[in-house]
Length: 277
Image (tube, rainbow, N blue to C red; front, side, top):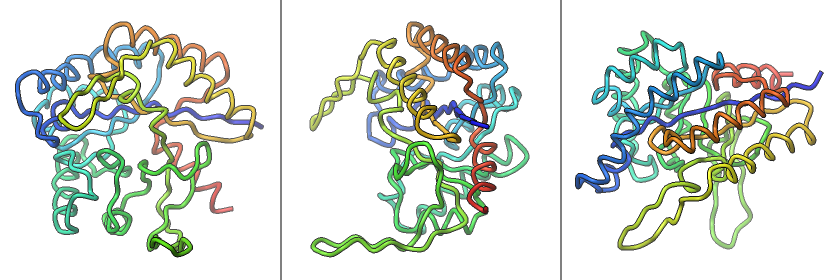
C-alpha cells in the first residue's frame, strides 16, 4: 500500500547563526530573537493539527532560551542535534567538532533526559570526520546531505574526490541519511541578507513557495510508492504572519493528499527497516 511521509522540521537557531557569521550588531541579532517569539505560534499550530515535528535545536538556543525550548519538549516533539554554536563542521578541526557535538548533546540531555538520535549540520556542510563522530556518539540518522530526494539511504564514509580522477565511493554505514534540499528550506526563499560579499534577495511570495512545496509532494506520490519528504524551516523565517498562513494552507493540502506526518526519528526508523530487507 502506498505510504508517503512528510517530516516538518524546524531549525531553532535564534541568534546563533548570526553570531557564527559575525553579525553581532543589534538588528541581525533581533532577527534571530524573533524566532524565539514565533516558536510559540508554530507550536500552537502543530498542536491544533495533532502533528509531532522535529526541532533541530543548537545548544546555544537551549541555554539562551530555556523556557521556549522547554515548550518544544512539553509538546512531545523530537529534539534533534544542530551543534552548539552553529559553526559548520567543515570549518572545524576534528577536536573542535567533537567538543561542540558533545556540548550540544549534553544540553539536549539536560532538556529531554536523553541525548539526540538525529543530527543536522549547521549550513549543511559536513566535515570528513562528521559521519565517524556521529556513529561514535550513537546517532541513528543524519539530515544534511542531498544525494536523493524521497528515499533515505545509508550515509557513506571515506568518499574521495580529487580533481582529474573518477569519484571514489566510500563504505556505507549504519547511519541513515534523511536527504534534504535548499529548495525545500524556507531561508533562501524568504530571507533578505546583505553582506559585503553577497546579497541574498529572498522575500519570495509565501503562497508561491508553498505551491512549489506541494508540487514536490505530489511528484513523490506520482513517482514512488513509499517515500519521505522533508521540509526545513526556521521559526524566525516561517514564523512571520503571512508565511504562517501559507504554511497552514500547505499542511491542510498535504493532509488532503494523504500525507503521513512523522518525526524524523520515526521516519528514519521506518527507512532503516526497509533498507535492512
